[in-house]
Length: 206
Length: 223
Image (cartoon, rainbow over all chains, first blue to last red; front, side):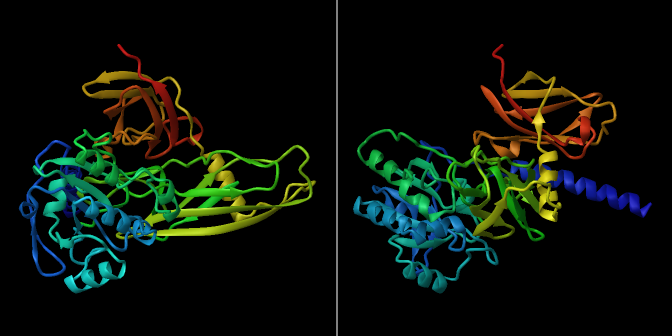
């Protein structure tokens, strides 16, 4: 009798979990939609709110320093170069860490400051989203993932950094950089040729 | 030729379409003059459910990737074949790995003894999915069902799942379907145009010769 009850319970739990898994998937915020607002602590101790950057383009980059796909873009210096170019163009670049405590890529403020300085990050700030609420609001699935927000607070791009979904740093040379193209097109007042792509990389470690 | 990947418990590597994260294992061959390599052929994948509704398609424990190497007609003596293999493997974290492999092949007059690795390659060839026969499409809201008959011996608790080659699907919407009567009806939401992928059964018995996977590549008729 006990055995029957136990297996029934397990079955019921599985069914519920399956359903929950299917439903809880965060939808990627689509281009044209209002960018979800946020206010997140930075590695430098300051607060960074989306509203601080009204009138500017904002780029969000989901990061996890130990994810091989993130390493690909930092070891090849592609991420830092992209950050520097975005900065030259007048955009604000925020590196977002949504890794939960105890998960890969989670860092203390001091560790984050050290690491991103060491890799020569050109981001405006590194911010923490340890409860994952901002990542989920944007539908951030992978590291790296890029979101571009226009000066009116609308999402104009959500997806991969480029079109080579691999972990091989050599592929950066031949890749098409969606983040830069997106910024250039948006700033030129054009509709983006590729407003959304399927992001690739590690799953965000919520 | 086969490339045999052995994953530690809890780790998985990726199929040709990795799903919501990861990337396929790649093999770059360095071959002697006149030799040609075909495309990598992938064993049937399994579905790996991650947090937050993300889905991976890949392999736990072991996978053997197959490729045909074609020697030139005048091949003789001993040749060296090299392969550069790179992969991403994940459990809670993900790692990137590469390996350079070498094998020396000699033209022989007799069949050499079968090693454990050779047996794994032969088994992988034996299990390669063939084309799905006698199927039809049934239109459903927002997609199609793939409907096909199964062997009378099929157990009703066997499930079948569609794994797409193309990255145009929301993978968490692809769910396994059970045998119903003498057929299976596998729902493929968001299917349109050409449908390409593999149908993978949870156990043998649906198809002859203990097959557990079948390839489908067909245009969905416009009604």
